[in-house]
Amino acid sequence: MAIIPQLPLFAWDQGEALGDLDRLRLALEYLPDGPLVERLEVLRGHGRDDYPVRAIWNSVLAGIVFQHASIESLRRELGRNGQLRYLCGLSGVPSAAAYTRFLHGVVRHGEEIDAMFERMVAELATLLPGFGQRGALDGKALPSFAKHKASSDVPDGRRDTDGDYGKKSYKGKHKDSTAWEKVVRWFGYRLHLVVDTVYDLSLAFAVTKASTVDLPGGKALLQQMDERQALAA
Image: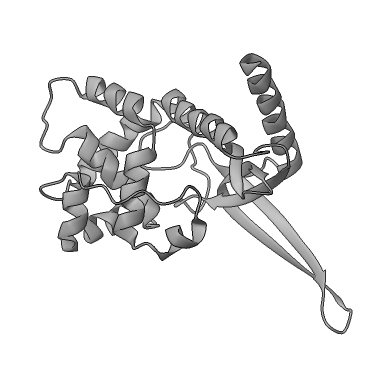
């Protein structure tokens, strides 16, 4: 794989000036995903290997870096972008079914994904002065592709049986001092974050059902951080 010259650490203005492919190269180079990929390769075993695990995983990361909303959008991009296929290590475009099987395997290895995040946070703590000392809680709605709760809680791969309904209200005042309120409702999930306010980087995260409000979810994250620091001490 071609490697771009290393940038000064955390030179965000230079990072923003990079093209999409260069930003993807940085993600592929620095993400500590080796243990996860090895587990996925073991899971595949001696089955068909038309598209190697590493190559499909790289393409999934590309979908995140390029902010594709769906696998079909990513597959269309792979179909028309030969440079992207080459960078991911793909000779063609995997089928939708291949991605479905692959992502089912990824979901089964949540511990490895959490370990990747924890490792990156630990490395940042050694590189950035004061990292993690000033944090803030935040939450974000994560709508499901499903529009409503399934009639049955039995998973069948075709409907969302885990999400539920959430709402969030925003209040303010117009220029004439009259109050306004906007209520957002969605079906799906909620992302809870603890973010370093100096470096604008995540310290901890959790995904819950949409009905879990920000404050209790954030307190649970803070408790997890305290437990993590106690173990590291």
